[in-house]
Length: 137
Image 1 (cartoon, rainbow, N blue to C red):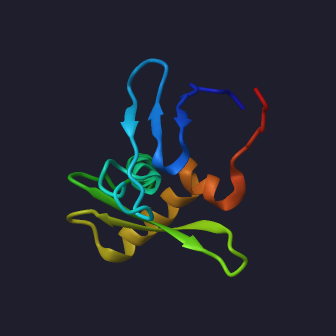
Image 2: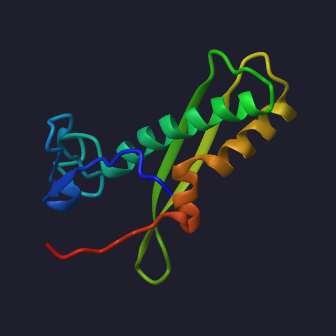
């Protein structure tokens, strides 16, 4: 494998804190829908993940269309990310991806979406395909 680039983000204060990045592209105060008074202060982690996943998956969708010799134009991808609590008191995510591909038949659009789901890095990560290294600094 070859690393193409590495993004870095720093969190302070957890779900109700801040996010920033060393180069300055991120400087966000988070909102927390589970905490009254903080819920509307800014985006929550699930919203940020939904935006990132929809953009990443959209790129994979366009590539899948090319691979299936079906150019995709004027498409949109909508990601819904839900924070869920399991019966053991742990947390997880549930994701729904919606794609609009004007001019493409529904069965072919489904095939393109499935191919994109196989190649999208975010989809792979949610299937347990992400390498995670834990480091104490």
